[in-house]
Length: 439
Image (tube, rainbow, N blue to C red; front, top):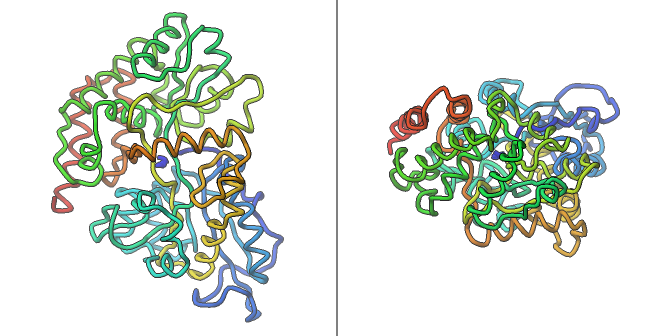
């Protein structure tokens, strides 16, 4: 995603964050102190799509409580949204009078970068310096927060603030691994041997969702197994030419199709959504699920009937980056309140809660992370980050590329097109975007 880019998980019910009704709609000039001292009721309208059981959902629910306590007279109005809903309608909504004051939004050129280029997001550069966000976030995590005038990430002004990290890994069912007599793989050859063992025993090893992001992230992982940092920078940052029929993407398309043919990926997964995939893994149906750290907290909460764990994808690179961004729409009515809320989510207390709930904090006290599974999650992220292994997400390079990749990977799953034809299909929008931005 997830996402990452990255993720379609159960949304946090509005009631989980709702405050006692206190009358009035959205109000305020956006330049007040936010302390309610003027006597005029003010409202912070907040959108995000994290599940109540996710690490971010838990941490941000606590942030709302702290915001309320420190801003008497201010009402937080949480509006329930879904990942796909915001992904598809953000441009239209933010260009209207219905824009919220603060919104979680996907990072990358195709999403936050596009909105910044269109003038729909507030420049947060001064606030980042004044409030110290630029000190709390490492340079690699700042990549997704900053965009140039073309909407390309990595430099320029701040248009978003991430307060967690994320990456794609392999979740596995320890009980099914033990029953099948296989070990956690540490090389790609060992991984394919595990997949083969399950498939020959009549078990589809990988839970998959072709109708949303998971299939394209697995496809990207396969490409990354043949890639290096220079290729990633060419694909994501336009620092070089990408050959869609070169060794990286050709290997990914052919191997993905081959895995469907061998039964490593179910042919019925073309129409599955991420939620379907996650529920199937949580129910114990599949030995593995290749997806992001955003699932971690939910798995901790919901898996009761078997032991599970996670491991890094065998290879030097994997999809990952900072988490999604807090963005402040240019038309937000209460920008000062939005900045205050972002500040609270960066506090050590909130960051520690996020870390102990299955998230990857960016400003926590390491000694405060006591949950063993959370430690494993964070240690794996740090290992991947330390070897410069965060490769962003495949849908980021071009506007609308998410839907292009969904359609292409569905064709690979259902056999509607050969790998080479799918590569042609996903190459054209990428090349068109390069032409649009003048590269």
